[in-house]
Length: 212
Figure 1: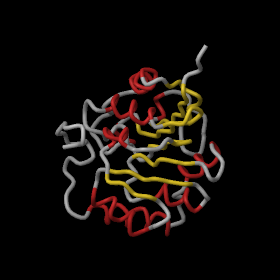
Figure 2: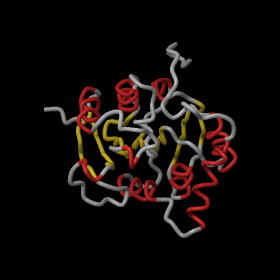
Figure 3: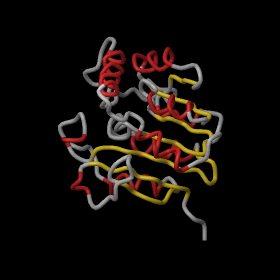
């Protein structure tokens, strides 16, 4: 149960148990050892705001993105509701402030951020029915000129789910309701052009809507 008092289980938590955080970290370590770039998310974020900016890694998992951003000179907080994942992050770095927090309760954080990043399919893996509330909460933690960046799969091939729980139209509608507008959208964290949902993945950058 979160601080807001609503019992729920995220799509991520369903079927997870034990030390899955260790297994998750080991998988990415193996990919890095094989020569794959594990820092695409951090690299893109670093093009959006200057070093020293305050960044919230929402659904930080084992901390891969936040740790890299801290290494690049950013002031980072990582939050996650998964104790197993967060414990790995806490051991991996003391340069990031780690918080055990359900994203529905992100409004309880006492600071604003120049950039909020939700990588690793965070939004589709939320508990069903909480997506709009989480987007609103994250929007509320943005500085007036802050940016929210979210990357997630749009089909089963790009998600650890049998099907995508929603599409970009729904996500954009939640952002609009939260006072955000789309600034830019890419097909990958490498900033490849987004054509349509047929590519199976999208990285969306939203900003506070322009006031007329």
